[in-house]
Length: 184
Image (cartoon, rainbow, N blue to C red):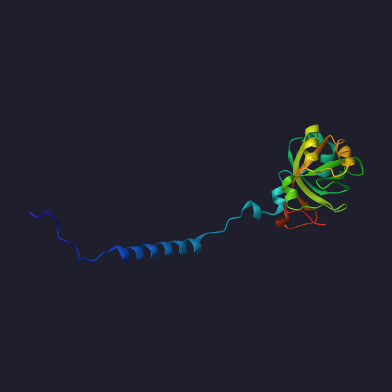
């Protein structure tokens, strides 16, 4: 008996043709996927109005009872900017019937997008309603929200505020501007 089997040195190696065939099969499969796949709409592609319908609150209803929305994320449309409070916040009027100012604070993410607000230009905002506390005022002070001494004094009068997570100019119809903010 032979200790070693005979050499296959003259036999054809199927490795190279099988490799080429597998590349062609994969290329054909990817081509088939590209012509049969249907595009899907991501939430980012949805119009801003559709995205806001679930949590949009009429401005008059919010201002009539702000405490009812404590801890909730809401969207307010055409919020008037009556005056700024340092670089991080602004005041809005609660409407002519209400006459009281309400504090709106820009979150770190909104400020990171270089958002600026202009007095007299209405904005659409989405954010969380929060109760004001001494610790929040101290955090804002540490972050440089009060460049003037009177700014902190003004903010102390707010019982609650809206922490803005998204801000656009109210007349902006482009959903790509959502979160990008407005410019002066």
